[in-house]
Length: 134
Image (cartoon, rainbow, N blue to C red; front, side):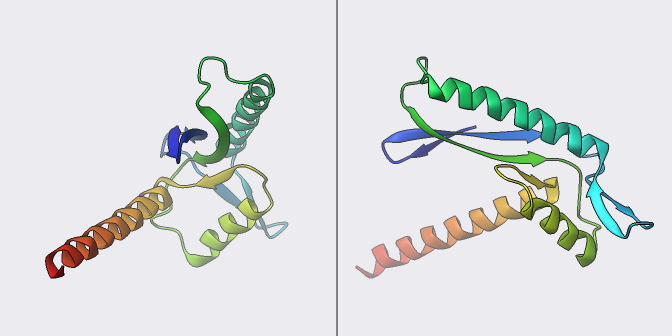
Protein backbone atom coordinates (compact mmCIF):
# COMPACT_ATOMS: atom_id res chain seq x y z
CA UNK A 1 0.00 0.00 0.00
CA UNK A 2 1.39 3.42 -0.91
CA UNK A 3 -0.10 6.53 0.70
CA UNK A 4 0.58 10.22 0.10
CA UNK A 5 1.92 12.19 3.05
CA UNK A 6 2.62 15.79 2.17
CA UNK A 7 5.35 16.08 -0.46
CA UNK A 8 6.46 12.48 -0.20
CA UNK A 9 4.96 9.04 -0.21
CA UNK A 10 4.88 6.53 2.61
CA UNK A 11 4.83 2.81 1.96
CA UNK A 12 2.77 0.68 4.29
CA UNK A 13 1.96 -2.98 4.31
CA UNK A 14 -1.38 -4.66 4.46
CA UNK A 15 -1.47 -8.43 4.37
CA UNK A 16 -4.91 -9.88 3.72
CA UNK A 17 -5.81 -13.50 4.34
CA UNK A 18 -9.00 -15.34 3.48
CA UNK A 19 -11.90 -14.26 5.71
CA UNK A 20 -12.73 -17.87 6.55
CA UNK A 21 -9.64 -18.26 8.75
CA UNK A 22 -9.99 -18.18 12.51
CA UNK A 23 -8.11 -15.35 14.19
CA UNK A 24 -7.75 -16.21 17.87
CA UNK A 25 -8.62 -19.30 19.90
CA UNK A 26 -9.30 -19.90 23.58
CA UNK A 27 -7.41 -22.45 25.67
CA UNK A 28 -9.79 -23.36 28.50
CA UNK A 29 -7.11 -25.37 30.34
CA UNK A 30 -4.80 -22.37 30.69
CA UNK A 31 -7.65 -19.82 30.46
CA UNK A 32 -5.98 -17.68 27.81
CA UNK A 33 -6.41 -16.56 24.22
CA UNK A 34 -3.79 -17.28 21.55
CA UNK A 35 -3.22 -16.73 17.83
CA UNK A 36 -4.61 -19.40 15.53
CA UNK A 37 -2.12 -21.24 13.30
CA UNK A 38 -3.24 -19.25 10.22
CA UNK A 39 -2.84 -15.94 12.04
CA UNK A 40 0.59 -16.94 13.36
CA UNK A 41 1.68 -17.87 9.81
CA UNK A 42 0.46 -14.51 8.46
CA UNK A 43 2.26 -12.65 11.26
CA UNK A 44 5.45 -14.58 10.45
CA UNK A 45 5.14 -13.70 6.79
CA UNK A 46 4.71 -10.01 7.70
CA UNK A 47 7.87 -10.19 9.82
CA UNK A 48 9.74 -11.56 6.80
CA UNK A 49 8.35 -8.74 4.63
CA UNK A 50 9.39 -6.20 7.27
CA UNK A 51 12.93 -7.58 7.40
CA UNK A 52 13.18 -7.30 3.63
CA UNK A 53 11.75 -3.78 3.69
CA UNK A 54 14.16 -2.68 6.43
CA UNK A 55 17.15 -4.03 4.49
CA UNK A 56 15.99 -2.29 1.32
CA UNK A 57 15.35 0.98 3.15
CA UNK A 58 18.87 0.96 4.62
CA UNK A 59 20.22 1.07 1.09
CA UNK A 60 17.48 3.36 -0.19
CA UNK A 61 14.72 2.49 -2.60
CA UNK A 62 16.32 3.33 -5.96
CA UNK A 63 13.22 2.54 -8.00
CA UNK A 64 11.02 4.75 -5.77
CA UNK A 65 13.09 7.72 -4.52
CA UNK A 66 9.92 9.57 -3.49
CA UNK A 67 9.29 6.97 -0.79
CA UNK A 68 11.00 8.34 2.27
CA UNK A 69 9.23 6.51 5.08
CA UNK A 70 7.28 3.35 5.51
CA UNK A 71 4.79 2.31 8.12
CA UNK A 72 4.11 -1.42 8.27
CA UNK A 73 0.71 -1.94 9.70
CA UNK A 74 -1.69 -4.82 9.58
CA UNK A 75 -2.57 -8.42 8.98
CA UNK A 76 -6.23 -8.65 8.03
CA UNK A 77 -7.69 -12.06 8.68
CA UNK A 78 -10.97 -13.68 9.63
CA UNK A 79 -14.29 -12.21 10.69
CA UNK A 80 -15.46 -10.75 13.99
CA UNK A 81 -19.07 -9.75 13.35
CA UNK A 82 -20.31 -12.42 15.75
CA UNK A 83 -17.68 -11.94 18.50
CA UNK A 84 -18.60 -10.99 22.04
CA UNK A 85 -16.83 -8.25 24.02
CA UNK A 86 -14.55 -10.78 25.73
CA UNK A 87 -13.14 -12.02 22.44
CA UNK A 88 -12.73 -8.48 21.05
CA UNK A 89 -10.92 -7.50 24.24
CA UNK A 90 -8.67 -10.57 23.88
CA UNK A 91 -7.70 -9.52 20.33
CA UNK A 92 -6.90 -6.04 21.63
CA UNK A 93 -4.73 -7.57 24.37
CA UNK A 94 -2.81 -9.79 21.95
CA UNK A 95 -2.26 -6.83 19.60
CA UNK A 96 -0.98 -4.64 22.43
CA UNK A 97 1.93 -7.02 22.89
CA UNK A 98 3.04 -6.87 19.27
CA UNK A 99 5.35 -4.32 17.69
CA UNK A 100 4.85 -2.96 14.17
CA UNK A 101 2.00 -5.27 13.22
CA UNK A 102 -1.68 -5.09 14.10
CA UNK A 103 -4.01 -8.03 13.52
CA UNK A 104 -7.52 -6.94 12.59
CA UNK A 105 -10.52 -8.68 11.12
CA UNK A 106 -12.30 -7.80 7.90
CA UNK A 107 -15.19 -6.51 9.99
CA UNK A 108 -12.89 -4.17 11.92
CA UNK A 109 -11.32 -2.92 8.68
CA UNK A 110 -14.80 -2.32 7.24
CA UNK A 111 -15.86 -0.43 10.38
CA UNK A 112 -12.76 1.78 10.14
CA UNK A 113 -13.48 2.50 6.47
CA UNK A 114 -17.11 3.37 7.18
CA UNK A 115 -16.03 5.66 10.03
CA UNK A 116 -13.50 7.40 7.80
CA UNK A 117 -16.06 7.84 5.02
CA UNK A 118 -18.54 9.26 7.54
CA UNK A 119 -15.91 11.75 8.75
CA UNK A 120 -15.04 12.77 5.21
CA UNK A 121 -18.72 13.14 4.29
CA UNK A 122 -19.26 15.25 7.41
CA UNK A 123 -16.32 17.49 6.59
CA UNK A 124 -17.49 17.85 2.99
CA UNK A 125 -20.99 18.77 4.15
CA UNK A 126 -19.55 21.40 6.52
CA UNK A 127 -17.42 22.85 3.70
CA UNK A 128 -20.46 23.07 1.41
CA UNK A 129 -22.47 24.76 4.19
CA UNK A 130 -19.62 27.20 4.81
CA UNK A 131 -19.43 27.98 1.08
CA UNK A 132 -23.19 28.56 0.91
CA UNK A 133 -23.19 30.87 3.93
CA UNK A 134 -20.26 32.95 2.63
